[in-house]
Image (cartoon, rainbow, N blue to C red):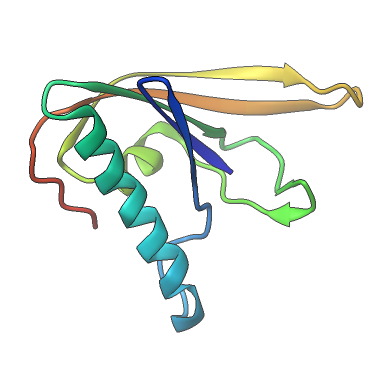
Length: 117
């Protein structure tokens, strides 16, 4: 699961890959709506921090399949209206003793008209 940090709000972000089959059109539409909501809530010149499982992260979260991202692929989900400023990875130890890789991306909203891919 990806979470967008927008000001004091944290928004969940769908983790399905882009439209590999028609049944996932709804997930794609939800992801696009989150990008639009983030851009609208923050506005041009604003910043968002996005966190998700990194490329070496788990394949499941809470029993559900997840998509793992590197900085470029996660930034690609947001389109050209967001400029990737910095990214970092972190290893997180869970209460169950396992280690999970997380990716954090710090982006600037560069335009008021956000176009998702």
